[in-house]
Each structure stands twice: as C-alpha cells, then as structure tokens.
Amino acid sequence: MSEQVVLSTLLKEQFPRWVSGAHRYCGDETVVIKRDGILEVCRFLRDDPRAAMNFLMDVTGVDYLAFGKRDESMPLLATPSPLPYFMKPKPVAESWERVGADGARFEVVYHLYSLARNHRLRLKVPIAEADPVVPSVTGLWRSADWFEREIWDMFGIRFTGHPNLKRIMMYDAFEGHPLRKDYPVAKRQPILGPAN
Image (cartoon, rainbow, N blue to C red; front, side, top):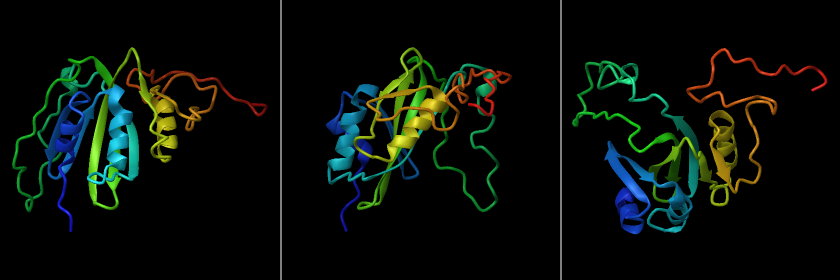
C-alpha cells in the first residue's frame, strides 16, 4: 500500500504563489487557492499520481456578506450542540476569526476525491463582490457543469469558459440570485402565464 500524501503540503510546495492558506483537522484537509491559480492547481491535482484526484464530488458557493461583521453572526458555542456523554471534547479548541479583511464576500468551494488513493481535499477560492468570476473547471471534470450552473443561478458567480452557463434552478425571467444574503425576502418575481 502506498503512503498517504499530505496534499496541503504538496500544494504549498508546488504552488507557493497560488496557495494563500491551508489547514488540517481530524483528517480533513482544506487549501485556500487564489482565483487565478485554480485551473493550474486543479489540473495538477487531477493528473499528478501523488494526488490522483479523479472525482469532483461537489462544488458550492458561500456568501459571507455579514458573517463575522455583526455580533449576531458570531457562534454562540464552540461546538454547534452539547456533546453526548460518550464523546470526548475536541483535542484542539476551535478558533473563530472575523471575516472580511481581504474583501472577499464569496467563496467557491470544491470537494475532490481520489478513488485510487482514497483521500479527499477541499479547495476554497475567495471571490470579491466587485468581480464575482472564476474560471470553469468543466474542461477537467465534466461533473462541474451543473454545479457551476447552480452556483451562477443561486449566487451570481460567473464561470468563464463554461460551455452552457444558464439558469438551472430558476426560470429564465427570474431576477436576481436567491441565495445571496442581500436578496430581498419579499421580492416579487415576474409571473409566468400559460403562454410563457
């Protein structure tokens, strides 16, 4: 059996200018990648035998509009719920920082898996509100097609190079992006009749 590779360390060595952060916790690895390097990093992760990330499990978007900027968004507990009696407390205290120092309102999060090596990796790409655009990874993993369409539809993050970037959840006349935190709750949408 081959030895397990620490993917965050491998990426820091291979792409020091694209990796802006990384952490490991309870076997989960997360690497923060600058937007301009996402295609190069993903191609390396797919093609290099040490990573062999041949399966894109999921791509999602996150909107950090108010997170960490108001007291209401601060977590009340270090853990979401009290631990059952048979579970030990986490070995390392969780830390919480205020978000927004770098001006990134959005994140695109990629969950990758290697069938050959049985390891996972989470890539996070911070995106500024003023320019919510990311290169598409559909040329590397075809499964990204609908994921990226859903993110564009729900969050308004565009994917350059996507072969068919159009709405997938909402109808074409829908105005706005409903998972953005500033989407008006009472917004009225165009009504479609039988002729539409």
